[in-house]
Length: 231
Image (cartoon, rainbow, N blue to C red; front, side, top):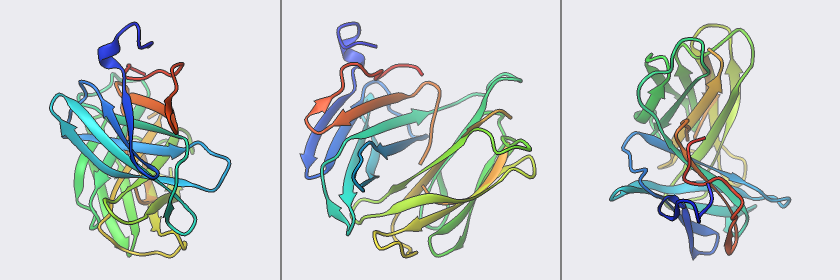
């Protein structure tokens, strides 16, 4: 979608500090969504979500970039915010997400077949997430994890992914800038997209078909990108 076509649906990006950007997704406010941010840079950098809140009819996501050592730095990124409801028809692609607090309590959750998801804290910075009914016997689809913390540098990654039974299971592990496992006031969200169920172990944020995405480089929102549109 081009800005000239529907300017009211154009995602806006404002830099509010070194490596920190405020991204407004118009007409996307939700209490059950998740945000993901990904680095687009050849240099070693990582991004995390600082906050993810509704702002009137819009949704506001603030993201932060760090270089090694936990030092704020500017870099390019892709960010999306997604919120889902209802179920997909049988035979269509399956997907789900969770957003959880540091002890594994879910703040947002979606499962496209209507089954419940689950998050279990296995240890310091280590979590198991089950997206029930979304796995297959293969490692198909994809997983994405994004750390969320309002103050301190945090990173999350997928540590393990098991497709051995219908729940999609995966493990999430959170590491700080020194690659040490630590526990903090971090929120995690996690996304799984596949053909039909799974389990994984690791820690971070989520997705949706009717989501919004923006690609950004310092000082410029890329005009050729799809933003504020159904994907």
